[in-house]
Image (cartoon, rainbow, N blue to C red; front, top):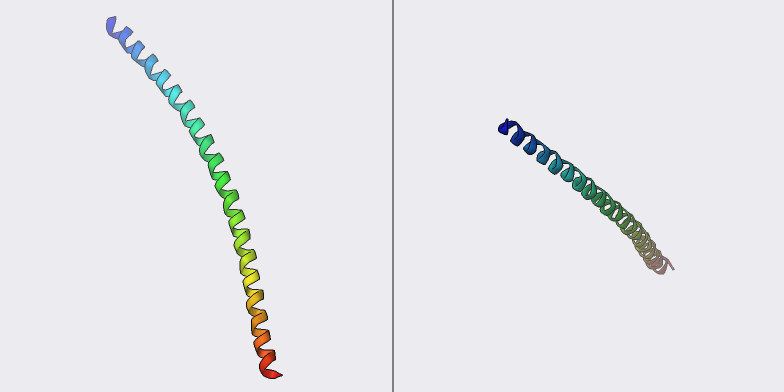
Amino acid sequence: MDQQANDHSRLDSLERETETHIVQCEERWKSNFRRLDHIDETLKRIESRTITIGGAAILFLASLVITVLSGKMG
């Protein structure tokens, strides 16, 4: 009988530990998803800025080419 009580006590303890673990994991995943969303937003801003700067550089270089070519033709 003592063994059964000990087993029952151990089972209750394991159930509590498992529930605690599940709750902690859920919180960690929520935190991870919030961080991933923030990283995603930051990457979108960086991509947008990179495209803008690339477009500006292309326009600048194209204007230099046009200036050089129009100077040689005139």
